[in-house]
Length: 72
Ligand code: 9UX
Image 1 (cartoon, rainbow, N blue to C red):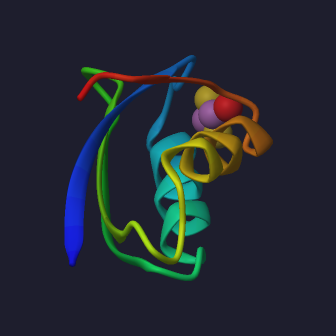
Image 2 (cartoon, rainbow, N blue to C red; image 1 turned 45 degrees about the vertical axis):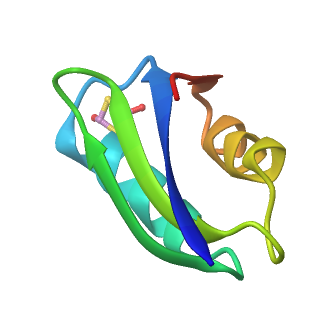
């Protein structure tokens, strides 16, 4: 079953930042949707918990050069 998590993404300053984070999240196996809001620094990610973990989602954000936190 897919669930949606909300991640905080700190340090994004332009649309290229949010696009890069979206691409990185969507490239992960098990992620079916990712939407990153630049202005409020928030990412909504829909994923299969059997295929990918929240820790891995946060790792992908951090590999883009941003700080990630779990909002809900
Ligand atoms: Mo935009 Mo983001 O010029 O690290 S790509 S600020």
